[in-house]
Length: 349
Image (cartoon, rainbow, N blue to C red; front, side, top):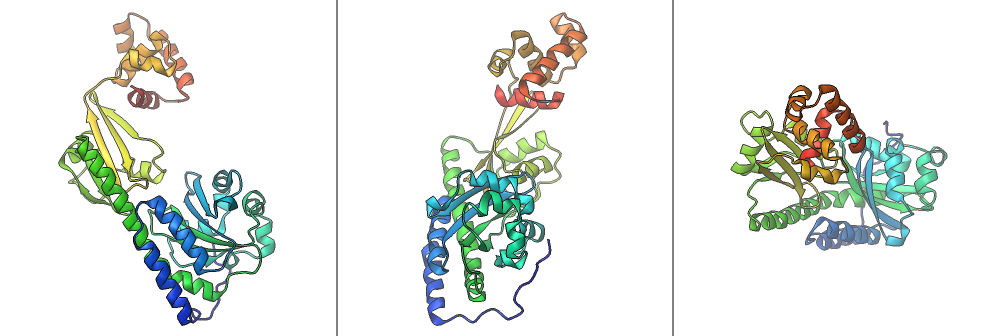
């Protein structure tokens, strides 16, 4: 995604009043608590700092096609805005550019497309048109590669000036610091709750997804389930991919009769809770998935690593009968492979 143009002039000179307003904004967001409070306070502050019709906060995962969105004022958001944004992430010039480059400077929609080009996009028809947005100025936060999280200022008429861009660029580093503090405060609270409940398997993460620290219990559990060299600052690929995909639910895997469950803590992935227990899925527990008694028995044995032939001998049926039961299980669970069915069994029991 190429930048259409950015003013060749140097950053616009800011007046003393602009600097005072920026200082007040930074002070206001410096003491935020959790990420939700950060989003709310920042949207209100940006609306006062730069004239606009409304401000939005979005978290997007272009690869997974997922998005969340908030606005200030709240009534500015159009129905199903997050869904419309998620459907059209690949067409969003700003999201595409930020995701591909990792750049953090403030950018306008007009840096990439003209008004005529903007109005021809499905993105405009489904989202920005109904919201009466013709001009945007965005500021993003440092997050994991491929994700785009940040704020946009919206206007119906007249584009944002270079003075507006300079103001947003001025406060952007402070936005990043306040965001990181909100993640850490949220993670600390979640970690304290986990420790009180006797769950010592914890992993602390940096904003880029790197491992800041890991408890001995968590490291041992991860080693049993993934191939790891000496514990480094990288997560196992399977865990890193789960985080990049948005970690919408727990990551569950099993090996040698031991089930590992990983949950993200702190609202945004700032820490991981790693729990492991030596259990095997039971046919009784799997019945809750809507399976027949025999299908649940077969799935429980598949989850323990048995082949069709071994299951057939144990249940005194033919391998063909086991195969048919598995086909019914796949259909009911909405999966296509043996490993997916086994993972569903471990997650459900």
